[in-house]
Amino acid sequence: MADTETGAVVGAATGTDTGADTGAGTHAGAPASLEVEGLAFAYPDGHQALFGVDLRIGRGERVALLGPNGAGKTTLVLHLNGILSADTGTGRGSVRVAGLPVAKANLQEIRRRVGIVFQDPDDQLFMPTVREDVAFGPANLGLRGAELDARVDEALALVGMAEFADRPPHHLSFGQRRRVAVATVLAMRPEILVLDEPSSNLDPAGRRELAEILARLDVTVLMVTHDLPYALELCPRAVVLSGGVIAADGATRELLADRELMDAHRLELPYGFARLDCGTCAPPG
Amino acid sequence: MGAGHAHNLYRAGDSPVHRLPPHCKLVAVVLFVLAVVATPRERFWAFGVYALLLAAVAAVGRVPLGYVLRRVVVEIPFVVFAFALPFLATGPKTEFLGLTVSHSGLLGAWNILAKGTLGVVASILLAATTPLRDLLLGMERLRMPQLLVQIMQFMLRYADVITGEMGRMRVARESRGFRARDVRQLPVVAKSAGALFIRSYERGERVHLAMLSRGYTGTMPVLLDVRASRAQWGAAALLPSAAALACAVAWFAGG
Image (cartoon, rainbow over all chains, first blue to last red; front, side):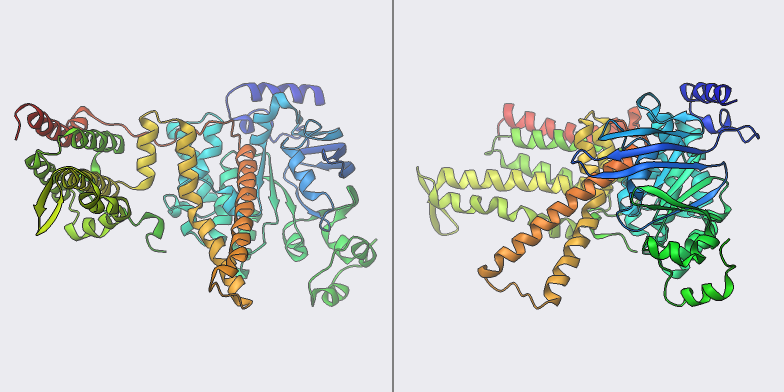
């Protein structure tokens, strides 16, 4: 099964640009959105960040990636679209996105399939207007003209920012910029959306609006966050990355209720939630 | 929200000058300036013609005189030298406004002042009728190396971000009792500038990462194409053609 699927997907990659509509369809036999196997990595300066990560995320799942600072979360994320790889340091293991291995020959298609939303929207929005910024990714994939316009309008509508298309990004509020940043990767019709601290610096309303948008999207989501209530709200499943390995993987509610696990990996619910948690959560196991 | 202070040269409007494609206007201004510079400095009437041409453009573009004059002050540092010339230059002396000054120096000063001012006013009119973004598109259309256009585009996008960062650093400094009173405080300011540079450099790296993640391969996709019709080129050619004519007459017919 895996072989035929990979064949179909590679076919789509070498074709034009609409791989999402062809190769990695939604039929039952489709490969997982993300398969990470035995991924280890050390930076050129010798710092070992990952020690063998195994992670499988099925199509349409929403998964929170939790872990203390320095656990290797960013390193893992940058492996998903091939920014970091054994070429840029020393490493082993493999990453496959919808069956397609992350390798130099596939980079362009991999970067279409993996949409990373970085933490600071000012890093992500670098074009003079919102419209041009959202068009940047699909244009790099070769889309032009009416097809490109349609893709931009669709992505902006998904995050409710259609009427801001011709504004310069620096005239938008922080929450609006974060939503546009999400649109810039949605415009590439990704297989998996990777969000780096999506709730950081948002006011409560902006936070809720983003959550509503993310919950509505029909796409696989991997959400890197310290915001545990946000993880609980949006992601039924969570994995804990600690010390460069996956330390836990399970239902978010159960992981958050496991006091010992949380303490061991410097994970803490905000004040007020800790007590609440004991009262309302089912005990683990 | 507002218009944003990075674009205060632009004056929104919908005049025939505003509607001309940016690359036509760029070419027109460059040719106009070349004609002005090529004119012999003794032909005073020719400079009057140039000034009238610019006044006509301003009138068609509905750019008020005061708007232009306020922005002409940017040339002052560059023409200060011109005012000293009549007193410093050697050669035959002449009477001017009751002062005895060098004849060639006076002409030299007039030359710098007249040509400089005409060039600055032409650029101000261009900037007043063309949004910065369109100017960049025009440059790209004129085959300016894409790398230079990209650098300017990033400058345009990040000027506000970096200014904001600088402002926050200043507030943070002053909130801890720092006051830049004399030269002894200079090292602190210098260190802040260094920190700002490193932050901007790191931001550049993060932006590059974000670009790579969206399939950037070294060339920016051309998203907005600006095109010009024959009629638009013709309209834009009016200013430099008239100036070229004046320049030719100044050379061959004398004054």
